[in-house]
Length: 344
Ligand code: DAH
Image (cartoon, rainbow, N blue to C red; front, top):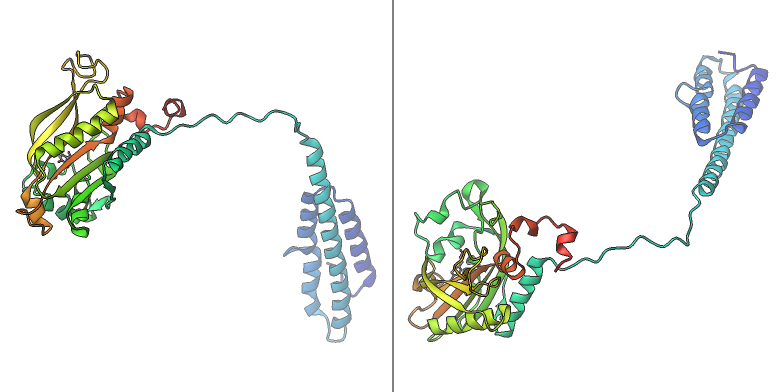
């Protein structure tokens, strides 16, 4: 390395460097030169380091001279960098010329998701009948999902098989929308007409079961409510949903939170009750569960079960949608294939 006190050497370094910078042909070249001259081991940097070896008298002048060279190199580098950048942008714009008169790519029509569409339709029907919409949490306790709904401790629905437990069993993902009955009853006072739509979870998966699916719960509590009211409301509802010619059939059933309980079938939408593959030849399709609210449920929320009576019902949205649109595999509902969705 030359002695920086030799001003001729420094002048040469400066003029050579400026010439190299002036002939840099790209941003890349400019950056390489910056590293070569001003980088940690660069020409200028190394010379700056040798200043300490000079005597007290020599140092100020040598330092000033070197700094002046450094400043002019920095200035030249930044000027060159900005003109190279301008040049590169201009070149790219010329190269990437595009035809603004070309027609745009078509954006295909979307559609309502069948689950959302059916959900909205059901909510609309019940709102017209005077029901109000309530939502509840998807993460529940055993108390709300089971105990307060009168499930005995050893009821098979509590099995790990059906229920997703979280937080080491301290919480669970609701297996049905029925716990919203409890939330609503605790929050409000009878008389009550409530529907609760929402997502529910079960450890189950095949062509007709999904681990996450949707239900619509409904219940009505007032004085002197009887099974006839339940039948009337459900008939009105089914006729709105599937048309006036659809028949209903109530079969005795069991749910812990209703007594008596029923499963409700509708005449098959596909064959109008004659019997086909979808209804397995019976002419009937199961659509919902329902019943008179068990007095134990009313007692659990502190309602006087001598004074108040009520009915409740619950249905799977996916099932309603599959029957309405003739969809035979539940997984189609979750794949979000635009070709499938845009049919609705
Ligand atoms: N919670 C029940 C289920 O998930 C459905 C149900 C049946 C809800 C009867 C009700 C009812 O409110 O009365 O299978």
